[in-house]
Amino acid sequence: MMQFYMPTKIFDGKEIIQEKGQLLREYGKRALIVTGRHSSKINGSLRDVEEILKQLDIDYRIFDDVEENPSIENVVKGAKTYEAAQFVIGVGGGSPLDAAKAIGVLLKNPNIPVEKVLFETPNAKALPVIAIPTTAGTGSEVTPYSILTVHKEQTKRNFNCKIFPEIAFIDVRYFLTMHIKVRVHTCIDALTHLIESYLNTNATAYSDGIVEAGLRLWAKGYPRINAENIDETHMNYFIEASTFAGIAISQTGTSLPHGMGYYLTYHHGLSHGHANGILTSSYLRLYQNQEKVKQLLTYLNMETIEEFERKIDSLLPGLNLTQEQMQRYAEQMMSNQAKLKNYPFKVTTEELFMMYKQKSSQAESNR
Ligand code: NAP
Ligand code: FE
Image 1: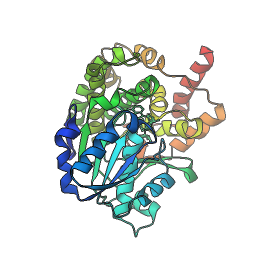
Image 2 (image 1 turned 30 degrees about the vertical axis):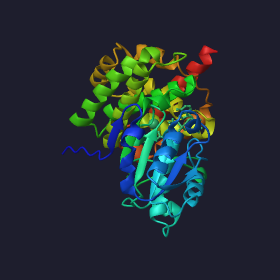
Image 3 (image 1 turned 60 degrees about the horizontal axis):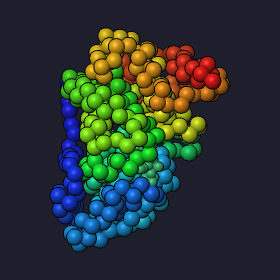
């Protein structure tokens, strides 16, 4: 059985909010804008949203304190900003978009305890969520996922309901202000989504077709990935690749690098894209169907895993983990059933340990 479901309406173009923003009228008279601390004020996205809401006479409040890798406490605080909101508008990278979904769930279900509604209520509904991405990384504008930091478990966890945004408004102008490092790391996150969707238990002809298109777009953007100033054409390649990647993982989920990367973000402060990206060449090596790996590399115009590793790792700082840390994360990963089941083969603690080790020893020998 194959299925494909992606209900988000995507509007992509310059000044798209000015052009299509009147669609917001149907979601009510009270909106909560959920955004990060700085970037949306600088790249014009927040101003465009405020202007359209004023034009439409929609009352709004702004929660502009979303932290990177938002925690449960952070989204609870956001939900308190406007309890009477009828819909939520997330503006920013994956962190504000994920926070907007979680806040939408909390506001829709005020009588269910927070952790129960986020992690133990698969059918929980949310207020309508509008997503305005400003990084070409997570694809959160078209995925039903929201990844939250859970301090008491010392890692990050996907909430277990599925909340697709109603609308994604995508405007390349908002992405041009990214610092090079943020651009590189988030574009690499999109690449890892494409790869983990393709090398995945749940991959279908539908998701594979989207991945192929996404990888080809990503390869077109790649020559300018760390350019001082990226032009709109190349940025658009990455934006489309990232949205395609989001559509693909919304069908398949992600796999080992994402699950294993969460520990690197939580304990070592690596950005999300850096954490997954650094583990990806090890994943390509581990994957037992090397024919499929070869196929994937051809979409990227690459010949070998070594070429992939050279090109991606040269964009990312290396890893430096102790034996004890690698062992502990490998063991913890072995209990992450949600991610393990997306890997189509049997995997051992030793193999996961080696995925960390390949990268960590490389960092040492590079020094
Ligand atoms: P992010 O955490 O949203 O943002 C990273 C940094 O980039 C922040 O400092 C942010 O500043 C800044 N920034 C964002 N857009 C910018 C712009 N246009 N110009 C300048 N600076 C900008 O990064 P992200 O990688 O996009 O999101 C990571 C989160 O998404 C993680 O929590 C990850 O687990 C999650 N994720 C979700 C999915 C999903 O399907 N839902 C998939 C993968 C990852 P401000 O804080 O000032 O805005
Ligand atoms: Fe990701």
